[in-house]
Image (tube, rainbow over all chains, first blue to last red; front, side):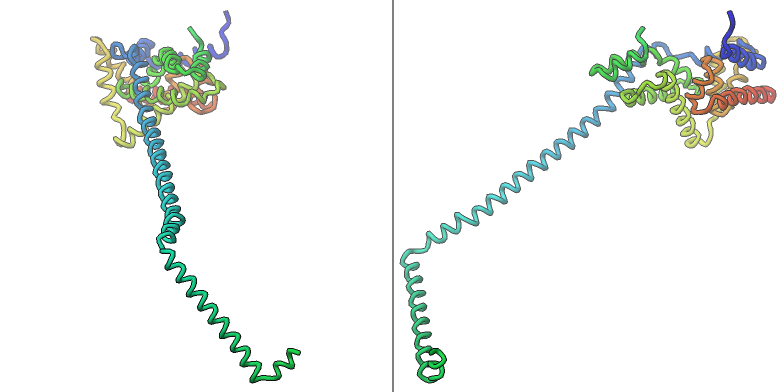
Length: 145
Length: 180
């Protein structure tokens, strides 16, 4: 059976080193490097999975904590804005209506009447002023006509 | 046994990712570990790097498009993690004390024959003296018997570059063995 070019090269490469060192020494080195504590490979997959799981747990916990914190912040924000909104509404309408309701009707009437009286006085004084102007300044009459 | 592709499809589409992932780990863990250990020689380091490799695989497997072989991708991640580890160690320690590492390893492995122990120490010493890329190319070519295309993909070089690395590794080992 013919050897492939790769095989022949491999054989040549191996022969190169085996000329320097005995094949036994090279095999011995390999055997020595292949020594492992008893049961090492039996337990290795388990131990590596445990390590992976323990490495992933803090990540999940961290994400969970961040999630919880953002959730708490959102809830706090909602509560705070609701409180502010309610407070503002309380100030705007009900308090104002209470203030008006609390004023006695008699006082309100007196206030309105006094304003009317002031208004009448003002109107009357204006009329008087105009009449005086007509009397003192006859040109104004021409100009009107 | 299921193919890598089938297991990866199962991983990517399933909520029971652990099962598919465990299958992949069981299938490839020893090769990954041995590749790493041949680079760092110490079990504890090889174990740490292996774990880092598989955690990376877990995190990235959903995005794996199967444009290359899974094993090539896996070995490339293992190679990069190992080189990063070695570089970090160099920065932290200034240099890696190869002699201490080798002597302890070799003395632990050899049984009885002092001549064999000497050769073993020489071999480990010369392998550990190689630059990381030459070392991994040597390991993958000699021990894993990978073709140069695959080695080039794993180490991020060209086929020619990988071949050159193997030949340089052999040459350097020859020089190191002469020195001893």
